[in-house]
Length: 264
Image (cartoon, rainbow, N blue to C red):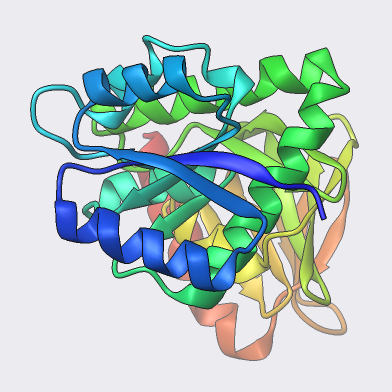
């Protein structure tokens, strides 16, 4: 089993201690080299130890987590954010952080986040482009959180063997595929994401993206028409026909009306 050195950065000592205990119990591949209550103390730890993984609290007095990342070579590390952020920032985190944990930290979520973070780190070491994309993802997250953007304009999509950044407005529609989600992009490109359709529904702007079926969300920017012949269908600008469930048909018409008004 490959082992990884890690540090914990959090201004609350009790959180540091609790996380260290959880990591020791549930993540034997992780060696905690030290804990820090500030960005300055954390940078000293990075000088002392060969660190691969950083557990990083975003909201800290003086220098927050994003300011800390701007002062280090963030692409060289696996970053797991630990946060109790408010709703709008949480959407940005879910949209762009490859790995994050919500406080109080659940042991099973910790194991999953560590597994993802370390596997993505190993992939990035072999792929310079992926390393650059990871850095851009962290920068998108910092920008969207600091500016208080309600719904993210860019999304980091985690795939089976990596991740890529896409602009939300270029998503035509999303469809569920078991525990995965297929994202159809303008230009006929498709991306398979390990996130569920429900997770994307919480991230995307509900004024633009509407769930027409339990397995489908459409971007109304690309909606061209509606058909009620042998069922209800949304027709997109490339003539893709997508079924609208009976129970969502009335809500769909109302949503289209609201969206049309927003364009006036």
